[in-house]
Length: 474
Ligand SMILES: Cc1cc2nc3c(=O)[nH]c(=O)nc-3n(C[C@H](O)[C@H](O)[C@H](O)COP(=O)(O)OP(=O)(O)OC[C@H]3O[C@@H](n4cnc5c(N)ncnc54)[C@H](O)[C@@H]3O)c2cc1C
Image 1 (cartoon, helix red, strand yellow):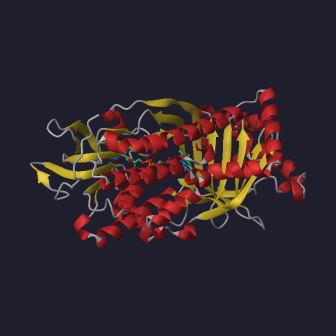
Image 2: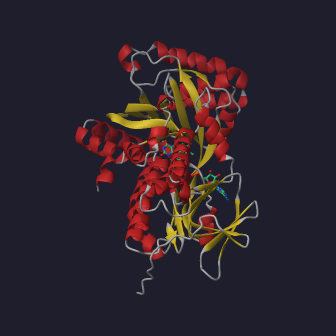
Image 3: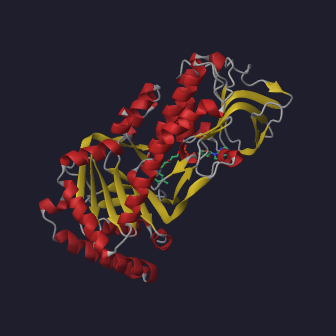
């Protein structure tokens, strides 16, 4: 096979114009958590930082990030993610973690999962096994790191064009490079186009890379809430597997929590119709009451909302009255209130691109894969993609290869695809195994969970996998 080789000199000047076309070496589309982290990682790399790099985003991200960093909002945003120690290590390595607002994150050492039908429970514990963080906190830190690197290397500034949607992508017939057209009518020709542009990635569509998967027919309801009080409990993540979908409660500082409740569309409609106080009651019920009782409450909330509140309070009081000091520890504390207007919902989908690279194209993060949030892996997978892609680009440059070719980019795909595919598969199976009330499966999964809970070695292995501790060692 003929390998095209050349000394990868950069197109200079970075943002020079040929006619009305701007030239860049690397163009990243999307300034979500993946795009901004990638931008800071490239600019942090001694091997890549002289490349002329641009970032394009349709929303007004620079304004939002400046505002967040200068004066963070009083309440936590409803878009929070659980990040792994491996993700944190990488953010530290590239200097982004220095800009994280640590007073707004929460480490947790425990996750307690329990089955909404059988009650079978499994506890995971490991020091700082997860850290809850607002997406904005992560994005603002990466943005600040880019600004810092821009100041340190004024000759290699990363240019951010926000409030500017990519409207069209074509291939330049002379060079074979992608040419991206923005809403402002500006055109940018680039040697490497990286799609960090989310699940509906325009870059992936341009490259005609098929993406396979299915909708979960579930909405992920999110919100920021506050516990009544945490007493002496250490910050703990909770996940109750209901047949309709899991309810995750993840701790934020000062007794706040972030929830992700996966529900079918009919239930999402019912829950969305509740007032804030009713919603809090419904969440407390969903973390404690039996499935039969919940069915009664769902029906009341739909058909007779005026009776729902009284019935839910009565059932919760009955339940709480029976709790002992010991049994109380098996449930999350009661939620007291919700931050106004913090409720949101997102459709949940599994998708996986057949390839992450093509000639002058790479896909990263949700552009390459989306997963059910029950294991908190989506963003973490994207961060691991970034780590691998940056390493791949560095290797290509060190070897004098054209880093934009599929040949140079292929190691990124071959390293990340199998790992991501395995994670997507495992998460999908957990969703399926827990999404049923078929008695033999409920029985089998509960038996399995009870056995596993008494096998510390296996549990440690599972924690290692979920927190990527083991994966990164490979
Ligand atoms: C309810 C829920 C809970 C989750 N919890 C977790 C968790 O606990 N842990 C975890 O690891 N992951 C979690 N995830 C997944 C995580 O949120 C995503 O994987 C992550 O946010 C994806 O980041 P991204 O940068 O790849 O994509 P996105 O955040 O989707 O960013 C894409 C960016 O591209 C921009 N863009 C798109 N099209 C264009 C265009 N044409 N022109 C210019 N810009 C464009 C968009 O405006 C956007 O800013 C959760 C997801 C959901 C829905």
